[in-house]
Image 1: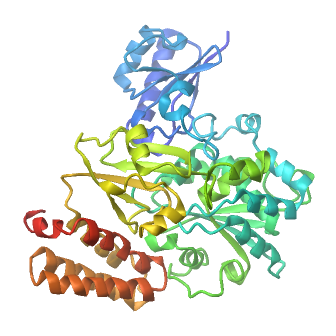
Image 2 (image 1 turned 180 degrees about the vertical axis):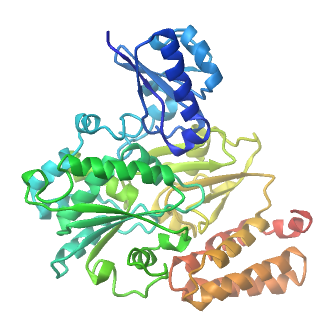
Image 3 (image 1 turned 90 degrees about the horizontal axis):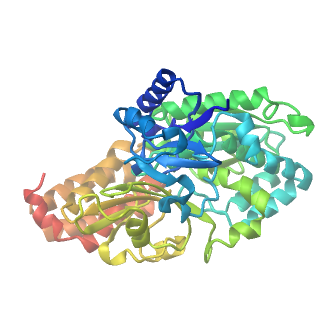
Length: 516
């Protein structure tokens, strides 16, 4: 008798709301009932608002049940769970859920679909197909394909990935590296984590492609310490790849050597900056380096190094499989392809939405997010993490496009979108931006280290109503100094959220006096 497959995510957000307990309850109930099941711990589809999301395979369709609690399990079995029976938690076939079916899932297409730690499952779903194709094409053709795709760095900077790879490939030196920046520290962001926990072997393949293209034989994953489950899954995935001859010497008889080491950070936000990350990888304090030289020329241990974000690297396999032109057909202008936008904050349906560039902020919030969780009007939306500008309600029709955001003094960054309703006091958010910088600054440059501390003091005086006009001018001057003279984006971009609040929410500095 065939076993019925039941999927319960093993992913940080799902586990945090009881997925492990649901899995135990399902296993226990199946044993009590004498049912023959196969319990698969998959990754998350990204519909975080529906977790724990349970699926059962019935006649080649996976029937989904959302927001399942352990107490629901007996009733679900009584209702015919193994046959996709009707129940209050039933959502229908997973591939017909509107939140998912209307996405452009290029990079995250395997997340939720497969068992992340099953080599057989991965191979069935095109696993390592791109690497095999890359070996046939040759390294130069791989780089040209990435250039054709228009893929830009998804970590926030938006630099063309193909040009970075070409620079490393052309650099002199027998030793080169691939450094994967998985230090996902921006507020409201979780796309890297979902990918690492849901498709780790796909990420490994992406690093292999980068290494093959530029002539690197070693890769490093720099993972933030706050992701223990991702650490466990990545560790097992690397071991699995080694055991199956997909990492190591002469991979699958290709003549290509490549291995990966997982390195755990120590909780420093500034290590998300590429040179600070390299310093940390080398065993030194995570302090920003002067540039030039660029890491592509002199990076890890002084050698040419590709430094890419998780989503950037993970996008490459399908670019090789489907072609650079296909990827470039998504998006608008110079913003090619797709990005995993992450909805968080005061939002009814929080989660990950992979869409082509050009969609508006309003469409994401209303059509996918369902508006605010409180039901109140949107007042402000911060895009791009704690250093991103705040958009007013009148700017929500701005298309998510690198150049369009630059025109309004904002940035897309890592794709995090944090929503605030009309009860939020934005003066406190301006203070938070400066305080965040003061706490997280590496301290190497004066504008960031001292400017952020003085910024908190100036904003406090404005909130208290002390010479507000004079302090407003002082704050603008301070922002100019930080933006123009800081060594890296930590100090240079802290003025973004502050300036946007001064421009669109200045009245909150008056009302903030009576606030928290």
